[in-house]
Image 1 (cartoon, one colour):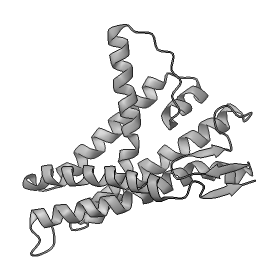
Image 2: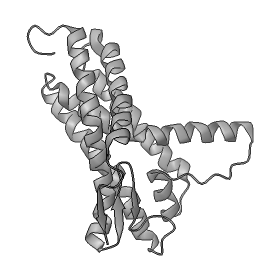
Image 3: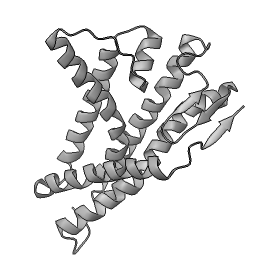
Length: 205
């Protein structure tokens, strides 16, 4: 339930705006998760708005466990943010900011979900697959030596499970409009962050 006097349309508009504003925050915290490894290991790296270069990135001479750790710290931060914000919203459903934060954080796994869907289509059609994507779950799986599809499936299940759980906490009559508002906020937030943030946020040398 929302604050007194709030109608669902006004609440949805507020939710969309909150998601727009919080999406860049979740992206930055996700990337700071990756950046923690080079920071702690004293490795040269650069923090960009949507990625970390250097450190123990794939293709460097870093051992596989460091590559896996750097790749996994971003998704770990995303899962933690989603769960904490989701729990806060569940405790008090007037906290629309917590709902927005949880959805914005979980949306980091949309790339993985798209990859998994594409891989399943390729497999179903019997087409060859020779691409080498560059996203967290793929790099984590490669570094640890297990199929990227498994990591992608886990991330996808978390994304849909989190969205299902969060929407169950919302009043039935508000679910669709809230979902649409947050989806629009995620898209706008990603566009705003990638378009307005400086190309390099921090450098370790």
